[in-house]
Amino acid sequence: VTPLTTFCMVMLAILPCLVKAWKSPQPKHITRWVAYAYTCGFMFGWHVHEKASLHFVIPLAIIATSHLEDASHYFLLST
Image 1 (cartoon, rainbow, N blue to C red):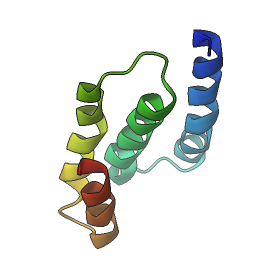
Image 2 (tube, helix red, strand yellow):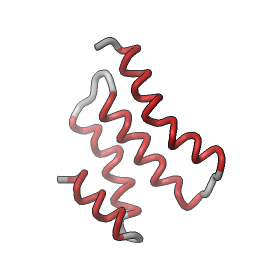
Image 3 (cartoon, rainbow, N blue to C red):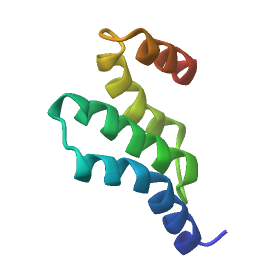
C-alpha cells in the first residue's frame, strides 16, 4: 500500500467529522473530533507505532468522565 493510498483513506475517514465540524461547530465537541481524527490516522496511516494510540486515548479519557457512551469507547480503545 502506498503512502498516497493511505493518505486518501485517512482523508476519507476524517471527512464526515470535518463536514460536521464545519456545518455546526460546537466547542464542546472539539475534543471528541480530535480523538476521532487521531483514531482515523492511527487506523489508516502509513507508518504508525503503538505509541500513537495515546493520541486518541488521552482525549477520550478526558471526555469519558462526562458521558457513559464516551466511557465505553474509551474502555474499548484503551485495552
